[in-house]
Image (cartoon, rainbow, N blue to C red; front, side):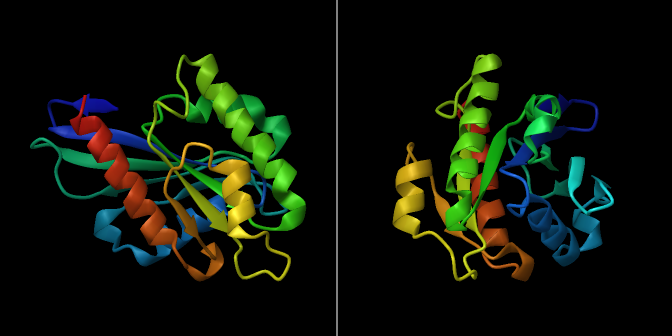
Length: 193
């Protein structure tokens, strides 16, 4: 959280974290395409020639008020590929909330868990934990025939019992409910400080 006292703004950072090709960028693109341009900034995206996110995607949302100040939510994605672990740590720095986007395909179970453990280790390196920060789970790609059951995903990934959403990000299913829940959790957390 960063407070700009001159502008009476609170800048909050939400990071979409998950394995490669889980749908993090797709979430941000759907949000960007559906929101009125007066409520959002431009979407900055750095991608490879294969349309994979190389470093990050970034978008800023402006909504409501918190303690008499205008909140600006900065949405980022991390690269899912393991070899960009340093970029993940840098982007995660200063996060006020996290959306963990898991790929529901059965063959991605290990990658989902490895990436969630990577997230926890990155937080621990900063003196934090998933217990300390607002976060939600999004089980994406629920439209695919080889999807894992939600009960198995819950057992493997939702060890803190956080809210979860079944989504199909490329169709916009549960993209905004996920965003609304993490914003709500971040606001509640900020107001309790």
